[in-house]
Image 1 (cartoon, rainbow, N blue to C red):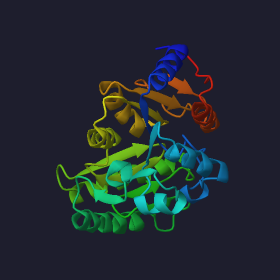
Image 2 (image 1 turned 30 degrees about the horizontal axis):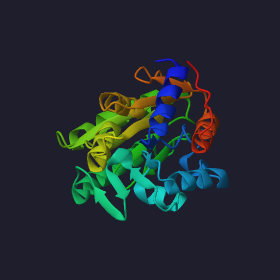
Image 3 (image 1 turned 120 degrees about the vertical axis):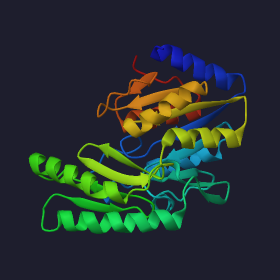
Length: 267
């Protein structure tokens, strides 16, 4: 689908009185990728934009991220904004918080075991960051020497395999990145869950994301009749129907969207 066709379809949907369910990834989609997660903080403009979307009756915005729900709540105190952390395992929506598809106590026990193994593995090594997310744990190696990063990540995967209960956990990978998370940590499953809660035939799902975790959701969005939009160039997003070059372009899109103005989308 060409960019102009995407634009016409979305605007036509709004002009006919339809609603948009906006699924928004955070890192790499609304803000640029930062050196560490702590450095990728929202600015006032983004908080205002999300607040405007949450207040508008036309939109149902859902922030869907790999970050833990507690971190999202601290960073994005926006009334009416649905927050889905740990790739949709933890969801706060409409004043209610649920943990979807996981036993927190069981997950935490395994996370603690993985954390101990990875702390031993990375002790004394530079360029590695261990991120404890509560219901998941990630090992970042973007700042290590590439050869050492590859060796450590391979060893990190091997050492945790005996700890992971079948069908209860998954291993996520990325750009010199490894994460152990519940099996329900799947953005596509989270999209299905949210849309099943909404049950509105006039709600069109539109998803903005930048990496392979979002690609898992893109297929679900397309199956549900929606529009997935890829952002940036970090990953080949084959299921996206459109593409925006950067987080700033996503913000421009959303601001113009609120005003009902024309949106420039690359073919």
